Image (cartoon, rainbow over all chains, first blue to last red; front, side, top):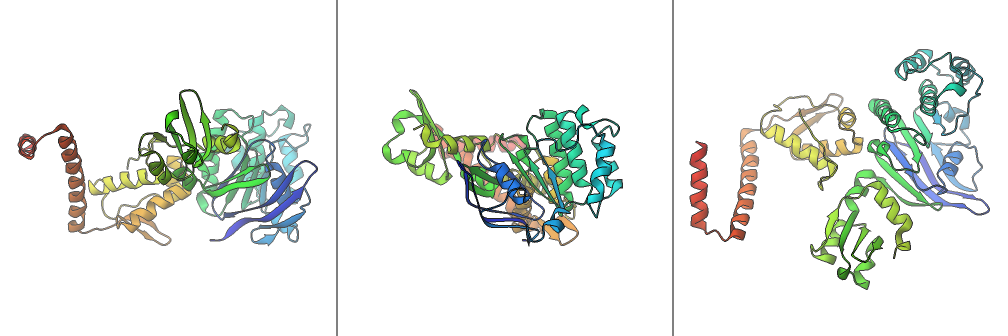
Length: 288
Length: 125
């Protein structure tokens, strides 16, 4: 399978934080959700991919090419959607478009107007008059109008209400219909948007905790609930994270098969959400 | 074509798709040659990931329920009647097995069970 994005042993050191040799790959035509708590290193990683920050080590390849050597060429085909608006507040949408379009060789005004219509954006309004959801959609319209093969979205859903989030979900499904485009988005809240994600990369404290097909994650992990008397020092070690109370325990185990051996059906087994998995891994041993 | 996905079910989503499509095919609601939606289209309609629908189609293909033609899409396979009957038979067997297990847990004897089955069978006619 052709890879659209490859991050290999990427390193970046700051005073109090470091990205520790992280690696992951996104195949063409698929969507990856990049999740993790605030301060985990998501935005740093994205800035490094976009070469807005200088890396200290490792390699990044976009469309199979080194992201610095071929920066100009690569950026022609990346659609970048920020969480913060990076437009001039005083310009109207139409003026902003006229300012941005000339940077792209394959800019298509026809496509731009199609999305403006679909997203119901007012071209004569100023950027500062837009709601957060509209700014995100405008950002997307611009990204989609220059034939981007890779969409990189940094926290696209932060501060958006469920209705706009669900619209974004529809848009993403629309985008990937042609098998040509790939999407990489980061988020610190696990939300409805993850329905669309084929792969999940989970980053915590500058390290990749897991990066695999979402279905494999959800099928492997399970939540186990039971009476506190069932726990002993041996079976407790099997948990990724566990929370004990006076009356019961519940925890996350990373392999369904283990549970039967450990507890012989005396426990309740439930399907976890990505949020459960994130919480138990982050808070993991803290609970114990 | 009707497919309903439950997020609270313990069954993986791709298996839910596999089982429901199988049932539709076995019941002949989806006939041989029926053009299934593309994996990406089905993913959008069901709001699941592309990998999920891809996996479901691969499983159905492996079991001979559908066929994929490069560049044209996936179709319900023209299976022979024998295979279809066999598959249905194994479903009947499985369900009867469940009934036997349940009857045993109630302490029913084989004769009592047969009697019950006869009654039900005749009722259906």
